[in-house]
Image 1 (cartoon, rainbow, N blue to C red):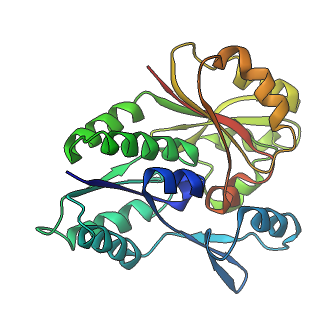
Image 2: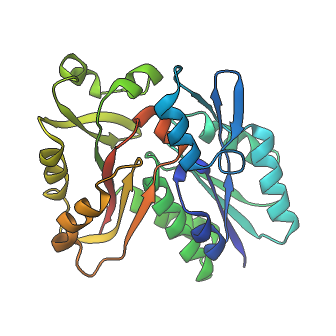
Length: 276
């Protein structure tokens, strides 16, 4: 049985990882004013961060169309897929999940397709897609993969510090972190993603304290851990800080792309993990 894994570009998986494990990525789009780009193919992460730092307008993101997902699903089915598992950015943050669901219905009776809400973002979604790809490579059937992904999702967490909440506020993605707004100029906000929405996890006065806050909350019973950052210059320092807690774990490091970066802003630093 051949099961194929699909995710969206907000998963922030490196293309080399997607190529290695056969993960298909359906891109979101991003608009700077009147100029629209397809994520990954027309705008690299490096160019995005350069534009964001100098742009006078907040860029906007748009979910992939139903047609984009349907084209991907049909192509995989035509290539011999016996089933497809599609894992997407939190349905609370984007219409991406809904687009995938509608597209899947168009292939009813042609190929079994399961759409999974990751209830998280960035490499939290990417980790689940990678887990699914490894299970598919081992010959796991569609429903078994979905059960394992949902189980891992329920053991997952994302914790990050932002330089500012301004981008979340402007983009309307602030969720339960609203209480931090009043003092956002004088603190380094720490956020978590809970049940698909952004919530307050803490607030400290300096970036070094914020990074220590995150490092101190890395659990001992790790199965997977990734460090995610938004063009942060101090990522190597943070890796050194967490190294005692991650000994023996293959830590992936990923740069947050434009889909999440629009709302997070530059210099975000955080971790996403799956506990045993």
